[in-house]
Image 1 (spheres, rainbow, N blue to C red):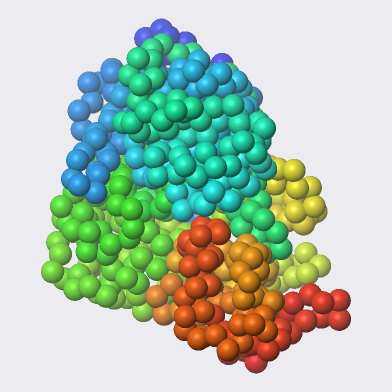
Image 2 (image 1 turned 90 degrees about the vertical axis):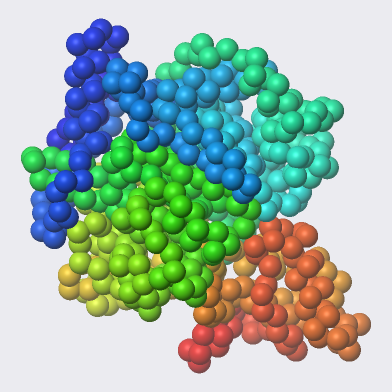
Amino acid sequence: MLKLHIMSVNIPCLVSHNRRAFTTLKTQLRSFFASSKTCNPKNFKDYESIKQEYKPEVPEYFNFANDVLDKWSGIEKAENRGSNPAFWWLSEYGQEVKWSFQDLEVHSKKVANVLSDACDLQLKDRVLVVLPRVPEWWLINIACIRTGTILIPGTTQLTARDILHRLQASKAKCIVTDDSLADAVESVASKCTSLKAKIVVSKKHKQGWINFQDLFRNASDNHRCAKTKSVDPMAIFFTSGSTGPPKMVLHTQCSYGIGHTMNGRSETNSINLEYWLDLTPSDVIWNTSDTGWAKNAWNSFFAPWIQGACAFVHQMPRFEPKIILEVLSKYPITTFCCPPTAYRMLVQNDLTSYRFRSLQHCVTGGEPSSPEVMAKWKEETGLDIYEGYGQSETVLLCATLKGMKIKPGSMGKPVPSINVQIIDENHNVVPPGVEGQIAIQMKPVRPLGLFSGYIADPEQTAAVLQEDYYLTGDCGRMDEDGYIWFHERSDDVILSAGYRIGPFEVENALATHRAVADCAVVSSPDPIRGEVVKAFIVQNAAYTLADPDKLIQELQDHVKKVTAPYKYPRKIEFVKELPKTISGKVKRSELRKKEWGQS
């Protein structure tokens, strides 16, 4: 029998159907995933011993749908569990969908048959899924894992140009979207030779498209899960870079499916160890991330369901602080996760006028946090905010874990499963307090949650997977207590309101406007978003007398049409020339230092 060994607790990945085996499985799953909240948080004095004990043994075969979700479904059947749903969806108009793990199993098996039969998708085929926060997104995710097809999530802010790049770069065989983006897909589909199937999630019928609702309604729920190896590809996330188009980050069946165990919590040797999300089957977690980002897979999919908790989803198309606060007050949400920018917006409201009866735990990540915002949130709600840090290429790397001392402004300590170091340009570990690059040690054991590499980009892969380390591209320092403090990106990528924006993409979009002779894009400080996109533009001679305000608006609108709207430059400055090297390369670092008052 294949086993997964984590934190000294064994979880069979393949279990025979006899009753005795299932009883054993139930006991072990509950022991590992479902420790109660009756114990008070520890002061995390056992941190070092946990690091020594955490030695995962990855099984040869692993499939998250079969080996985790269906096992929770089995427990529900055996115990007639009627407490929290596994999935709780709320529409912007107040409609609700509640699914148990049994529902997820049945529905996702039907979707798996849709992918396999109607779309003729085979093991390791690629599927681009561009959907808003609708229940179908979660079912399609599970179905892709069941069939062994590779999911490629995309934000609904993608333009036709963005979609074309993703389809061509990934060689996706199928795309799933809704009415809002179907026309954009249609306009570029003929240029994608690998694309064989187009699925639309809609009540309407569109010529040349497969209607998801029709097929789902008539599909069988009799499906046999693909036998996937732990190292088989599972998902591709597109992430922005500083020198080229978005890179394709490849994750395996186990890098997220097993790697996210440290996001939750567990119990070993009768010591209650509370981790970042602090989840149990009695919890309801609301993570506000967009479906196009890896953070959504982290905290709205893998981490909660590993623990048997409920993933709460609100469909709202845009962030509305008052709606957020009202939902937190009305629904039994125990754990809340949103980026620091969102907390900055929330604390501008009178939080004391709301009562968060169920809320127990708040976390954040995606960009540096503000100690002032954390203090105000604590003052008005009585709740601390626990910061976490990771990337699309990884799972959770650092965090202030539940029960650990909070140092406002710090990302916390490296999670026990990851060896995080601060290194210099020669890959030597620097002393505490000295700034360097944040790096993940890959030897003697490569971390379980680390990505496999950038698809079709060996140069970029080699640039970050060097010798003994994965180089995050982030600069920071470690203090005497082992806490990590973020300083800045070592490249030019801009971190704005939880979004990662590559200057190359914005510069390319601006360059297609006739008023732009040359341009450079860097980050600029912002009191709400932390930092925003700023463009320095050299105008073509014919536009030097144009109304500056009107031209700025025109350029911003142009970028929103050419690429995803969240990338547009919120600040624009017209200049006579850009600082450049002898070879003609723009000195973005010089512009960035000037913008941040460092020169």
